[in-house]
Length: 484
Ligand SMILES: [Zn+2]
Image (tube, rainbow, N blue to C red; front, side, top):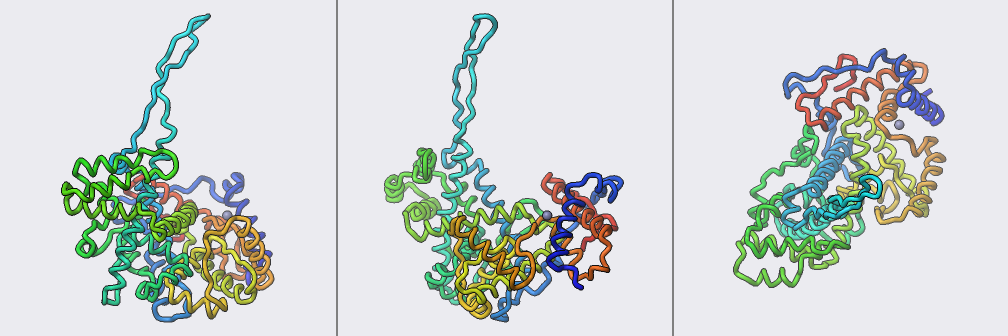
């Protein structure tokens, strides 16, 4: 009997939770003392997490076979990319250079507070009040950044569509992010009729080459940077472009207006009439002019730009969820993604079996689904065949509808596949699933499995903690740690 029947999987899940997460007493039985790991002595010795082998599965499957689903490698690169997006957002919000440029300052207010100094004696003490609006005002940089990114995307896509070469060069990160979010709205994407973009699978290989997964902020280094500059005149790095280009006094004054309205959309603080008249004058350098023209389009209330900004903003919530799960650094990432893809295929089959039901994915199925949507032509063909129709992805649904859809999917999945649909996807539970995957129940030494899983997870956590602590030399696995 295979071990992963619904009943045993559920009971093992409960059991592992007790063993691994909640029972300190049990922990002591498993390990007399928590495992310690030696540090690498040189950077070259540092462990590679995610392992390079994760990306060695064929990433070309979507290119060759129209009905093939995404691969584990493609989903893994997708997880890397979402980390890069997450850190891009954090870097924009925390950029002090951008604060200065946009006039976002800490407003310290001094007040005098009456304090008791003994019987009927009072004094007035000077108190500095915390600026409660500062964090909120800093967040507004992100929506301005997105409006500019959407504008740059529209310029870029027009050039790409006109260009005769078959291959699409990897665009700068801000443009890639807008492209990615647009693809996650398949019906809308089709309606825009981008011929070349529609038939091009997402450039997973090149994205993987460009991202540095050894760094805790997952930076993406664009190859052929000068090519983008030559064709568009703009800097490939939008943040650098913004903070380095504006030099003339009137332009600097204009951008400082960004923070003049605290309530609502502060990017409207930049006066559009002032911007227009500045562009009429001769005071600007060529590069400043181009930047301000882009800004003018970004603030123009163009519905496509606004819709693109909204699409990226909706995606940010998913990006944050993936950052919290952080499967890409977990010991079970290969298994998590392999199971996600199997479950995604079943999810698509449910659409064919129950054409009238609304179905809702779990987080793991969602990453497989999103990866598939990023290659629009293949997605269209495959869903028509496997799901019986072109399946749109509506990320604008409210929680009421989603709850009903999820209930539907849980019961239909159970009826059709006799397995749990929703379960815990944390590192521990996923590592446990990977450890027993495909094994016969009588072959499993439950205690040994629990011990191994705890060690693997503890090690991977130790590496991540060290990495986040900006430590250059990371913990090394002991001989017992399963690590490839
Ligand atoms: Zn769990």
